[in-house]
Length: 271
Image (tube, rainbow, N blue to C red; front, top):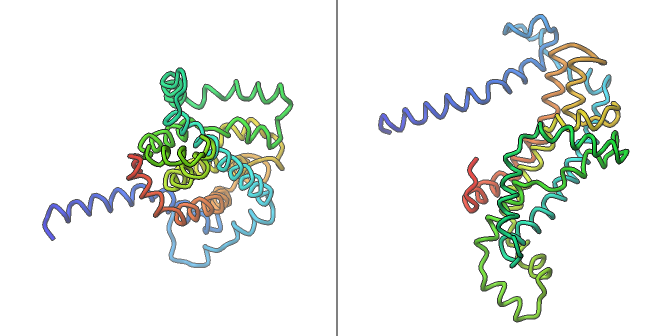
C-alpha cells in the first residue's frame, strides 16, 4: 500500500471519527448515572448503568411520542412516495402547458428557508382548527419539492420504448404509471423514502408549534421538553431519550442502505 493511499484512509478515518464524535458522546452520556460525572471519563463501572433509560421509559410520555412519530412519519413518507412520484412523472413524461415553469417553480420552493414557512403554516392550521391534531402534523408535509425533483430526474431517463409498447397494448397514461413506471422506479423510491423518513422523524420546528399538548408531541419535541421543563433537567436522561429516538432511523437506514447507494448512483444524488 503506497503512501498516498495510507494518507487517504487516515483522512477518511479522521473525518468519520469527527462526524461520529457527538453521537459517541451522546451514547456515553446516556449511561452515566450522575450529571456531575458526565464531563469526566471514569473506569469505575459503578458510575454507569441503564437508570436513565428506565427513567425515560417509565416516567415520561415517550410511548405516546413514539406512537405519534411512527404514525406521522409513516403516513407522510407513504404520501410523499405517491404524490412526489406522480408529480415527477408528469413533469418528466407528460406533455403539459407550462411544464417547464412548474419545474422551475418546484426548484424555487426548494430554496425557500423552512423558517419562512413556520408562521403561514401555523396560521393556516389554526384557522382550520387543526392545532394538536394529526392533520396539522401530516397534511402540510404530504408533498416535498425535493422528492418531486428526485423523481422527475429519474423519470427523465425512463425508456420511451416501454411507454410506446404499453400504449400499443391499450394501457392508459395512469395505468402506464402504476403498472410500469412506478415498479421500475424502486431505487429512486427507496432513496426518497430514506430522505423523507429521516427529515420528518427528526423534524422539530413544525411539530413544536403545531402540537402543544404532551400527548400529541413527536419524539424531538418530547425530548426537548425532557431537557427544559416538566420531567427533569438532567442532561444524562435527555441523552438517553436521544439514543432511544435515534434507533429507528439507524435501523431504517441499515435495512435500505444497499438500495440507497444504487439509487444515488443512478439519479446522480450523492450522500
